[in-house]
Length: 432
Image (tube, rainbow, N blue to C red; front, top):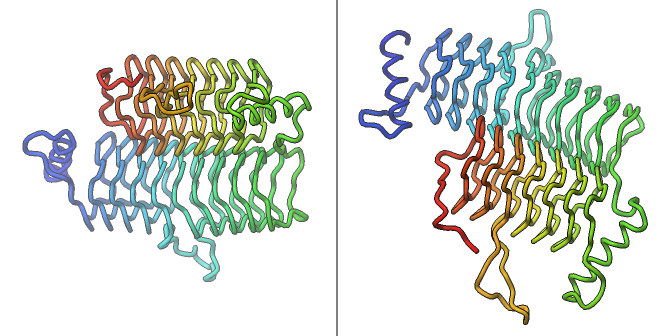
């Protein structure tokens, strides 16, 4: 299907997306679209199940939330294509160009995500991932559980939070990729290259690591239970600084702060850590509610599940920090750097203000992210109700399924952001 009929379907679909009269959702299920030119078109939420798109030009196309289950995409051009939350189960990606493709939240589980046929002369044991190359692609939270991806190349890709549990990744090349908080439990990484990759907070329990190369890799906070590292190459790999390895004075302040919290301020002392160097520290689950961390250096720190309620992190550097599931209710993050930080499932909603007797006053204190740099950050499923984002940068950020009720988005930079259809500038719902 080409020419006027296809063009009409695409135009009707874009009207449907814009809720304009005459719009109709594109239904191209099982259609043959080999070599079709769909560049720069918006096919978000289109129905393309089983469609033959081999050799198609899909560069700069929006396919967010599209149903591509079982579609043929061999030799397709997917350069800078947006496939956020797309259903791509069973897709054939042999020879496809996946340069800077956005696959965040896409479902790429096998039923045979790669249905590659063995090359001529190869036996049945040919590896299905061979020949598939992802370059600078974004695969954050992609579902690849049990994927048959042996020999796949994912060069300089972002796989933050992706699920690769039990995947076959033998001989894969992940050089320079970001694998923060990725689930690789039970995966086979034999002879794979993870040189220069960043795996902070990743789960590798029970993974096969025979011949796996980790040269200059960032292994901060990686879960390595039941892993045999005797055959892995760990030259210059970096491991995290757990709380116990921090300077005695720093450990003392954190412990005294927790006593201060538990006693309602009667014992211990509030942590005053302004400008503190906690870069790369493993602080998962730490309780620093109400602490002063203004201007602190927390680049690459692991703060998943930490209680940071009403903490002052204004001007702090949290570049590439892991804050997955952290509680930041009412936190002050004005002008902080959270570039490429992982805030998936984090709470940034208002904190309850208590009376002197410790009971709720009925008032609340919203989180302040004014002027904050969140470029490339993941706020997937985050709770950011009533937060102040005035003047913040959310370029290339992921706000899929985030609760943005009552959020102030005045003067916010949103170029390339996903998951935020219609930000409301209204301050009428401001809590305080």
